[in-house]
Image (cartoon, rainbow, N blue to C red):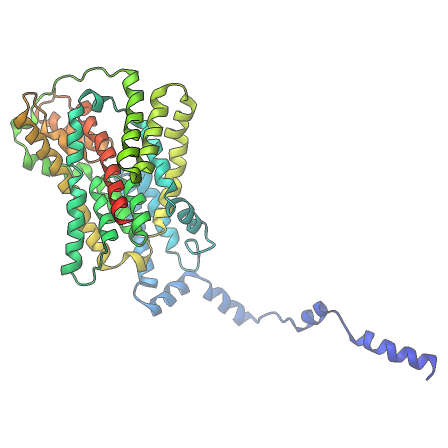
Length: 420
């Protein structure tokens, strides 16, 4: 074999062998115009709504209904100013999560991680509780300690609603609440949104969206729900009762109180320590006077940032397949019952206290025992002012109001200890 022949033999494979990338480029063909149009059409939200309808009625149509719910919540938050800080963010999270093919609330989506990291773990509600503590003045409660009974009585709505949830399971087809579900639903009666979110995230995550919406909706509707109950259970003379002026509360008392409360919680109910602990820590920062920068950040920037992510995370749970069912209607029904019972219990406790005490308590402040701070206290003030414009009840109502915050946290701790 000659040299040229040999060279040809060895050079032939080299000339026919090409890099894989070059071969792939030759095989790659651009899609035709009709195929491009089809790909674009299949990636639109319209196609997502249509395809979702083929799976079930909670698919495409359900998403549309939930988006409408989101716009309704936006209307209530913006136009009616019903708990706007939460309803606006929850509503927007609801709208974003129900957009088909967006994947925002699915693994890999931003709201999915907001919920998974901040709400499912209970971090966001605890930070909110710390901020609320930094905003809370325990002075009215310390000046009139017996008002803690009013805050405690208002928590009766929690436990009565727990029983009601179990009763619905027995008598209403399509509703199947477990004990943990019933405990999570009952906490709505405390009218404390962060506590409701924290407890349901620990005991019943599948109901988190419905429970959160019920809790915050009824908190926002305090000025509408409470007055008829207050008028029904009190007489005109009772609504005119003037209470004695509260004594001044010193700084030392205000510093010692959160420490005593935390110590009692640690000894008697450790399961409530996360809620009570963060709440009392925020209050201690407020009252000690040496960490003003931290206190200011906690009650302003930190709580505001957390509120944004908390609302978006809760809104991400308002998916059609989770929200549009009989159980959600049951939760909304039980929520209003829980709130009404809590309001009535506080009023009736105040009337009972008047039977055994020479120092009369205006029963209107008993309705502030639900922990919708400070809205419930303002409703008590407004109702009293209608009967007697010179009667000032606001500071007196703040006592049971802040007691209600502590009471709902204690009730949540008890439910965690029993059912977790």
